[in-house]
Amino acid sequence: MKKIFMLVTAAFTIFLTGCSFDTFEPIPGKSSFISTINIKDMTISFYDLEKDMRLPDWKVDKPYIGGMIFPNKDTLLLYGNTLDSVDLYSLSKGKKIGSWETGKGIVNGILVQNGSEIALADQERDSIRFYSLEGKEIKENKTEKDPLTILENEQKLYVISFNHKMLSIIDMKNKVQLPGFEIHAAAAGGLLNQQKRELWIGGHGEGTTVEERIHVYDLKSGKLKKEIAAPAMPVNFIKDKDSIYVLSHGSNMLYKLGENGEIKASIKVGANPFEIEMFDNKLIIAGYDSNDLYIVNPENLNVEKTVRVGKGPFQIVTRER
Image 1 (cartoon, helix red, strand yellow):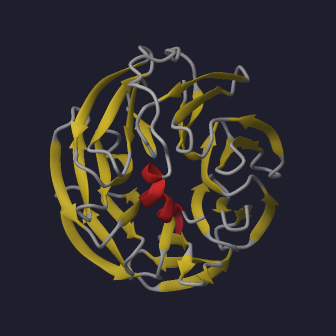
Image 2: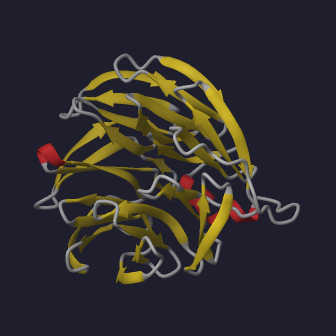
């Protein structure tokens, strides 16, 4: 199942039940955790890796698809593409503490400017919208149609749009549009490799053609430098000092690559995995259809532990102590 399709249809495949949930089990302020935002049963799962303990799920009453934790390590912001607002929750209090009226269309968001601002991808308005942590909208920059993946690097924001073969670039200092460059169709997921001045982009493929390769672009010229095989549907990336890890959800494969693209190791993991994060020197992978978190050793790609979470883990959000 394609992630972009699910972003559009998530709210229509979820049956809303019960009344509003006002309070949840508080999350201890000193705990580090891995959380998943689960779209099939509208829950948020929490797992304390250090204590090897799953904390109580939060059963929410809105179809959230993603979120982030503020630098204060207590405020959790949640968004959904069919919702009129993004909502803020206090982890330590276990309750909602505010909302920002954004309108519908928010499909992604990241902290930018060293955590002082938030960039939200809005597919209703085909734009990136910048907010302060207090909820004031600072600037809105138009992008190509259906912005999805957001990457920040050296005072530039790179925006990959799923339905347009043009990369948008925003100057972060002045919030102005810079010249972009052409990329491949149905692109999704990306990684900025600063050492080599490269942008790695994955995707799902177009029409009946499944994407089998990672496209590597030169950041300065925008030229396609090479393609790296990573079948099928490479959609998520993460990097450590020595390797780049690629998650291909069409084949349930995790690849460990060198910076030149050579395969160091690979493993089949999860069922329809979308999300990968690095946490406490471990790779964390969420299996959307298996409803599991997989704790993977990055050295040998061995699965060290599997943790059950809610149904349909769609995004991973972590907090380190």
